[in-house]
Figure 1 (cartoon, rainbow, N blue to C red):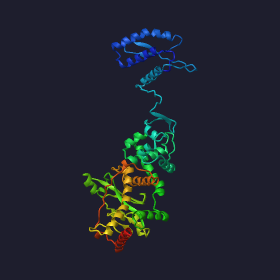
Figure 2: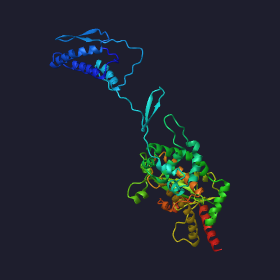
Figure 3: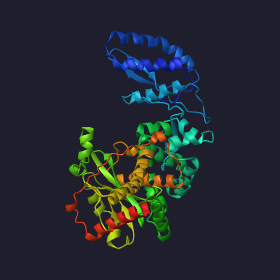
Figure 4: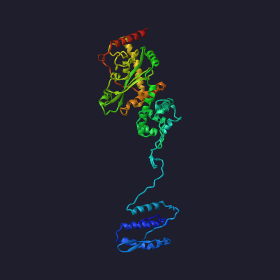
Length: 477
């Protein structure tokens, strides 16, 4: 049976026919309820004729086992004008009844207008899609990004002043900026840089960083890696580089005024960064000293750095396993290659007892019963060693992510550690004071190596003795 749109039947009459035919189909042909339905239909048929008095309705046969009932088959000519049916529920009932004729009922849902939680956009085919975006509070970041935030509060959060932070944002602008899309607005450069620096400074879990900046957890993790890569690409060549001739003279003069030891171009130190045990070759990163101290298995990677008198890094070597000694890491570093190429002639590096004595490396005397000159020499060397160690203490004090087990993939770790060293240099160059409460005590693997195992040259031994003698002579003179 084909049912067209019926503009002159009201909802009550239409509902009656809908329920009648539904009951007629579900009940058996000879049931008593059907007979009652048929009787009721005969009584109502006359009233329907009054409604349809102006229309000629041809009858169609409806056969039952007991009687033959004439039922109407309605075929109406619709007027040209559009007739509006105000009752939307009635229109949906007509749609459901048409589906019932085909043996099924289609359930439809009227979409509600977009509110709050999502936005609508058109795809390439012109269809509108719902884009669900979780609303997050950005109150903490808006406060720290506003003029209302005092510089002290900003420094506690990001370990630097607003002016230094602004300089970093300006430098990274071209490499960090993203374009807006049809789906969403791009995260501003200042917020991108702030997420990275805050994460490095505090070491807070990404869950907390997500809440403070009003961003997703995965988005925050992605921003940290992207900004660290930009720091390594853009800022490292400017703020962490081997000194030129002019700068080298300043470094030698600075170290000479502190200790009296001539031609010193840097203080070297190596620190360990705790990591999660890697799946590949974990025994290489196993740290025996840290394990003994912490009473649990500890794994680490290393940062070797050479610093100037201000504690600014001039050379770094990152990523070698924690099971390696300072001497082994030195032999694999670029600094060692510089010495082989002759770039360190007429200069010396000051190291602790974990490094070998060489023509270009000065280390303290380690045997017992030192002479006065040897004891005086060790004091001066220790003063310069302290400059390197203090620089690493400030590095770990500023960037709290280095104080705990860092949860970064091993292949991405050098990039993150390198970014921390660059940011350390920026803070040192811009005279950013570090709060006393951020001070950090280092505990590293300073292992003394026996003299016989080092293969020390006679020239290196004589040069150290001469320096020690001159230091004592100049001191008393």
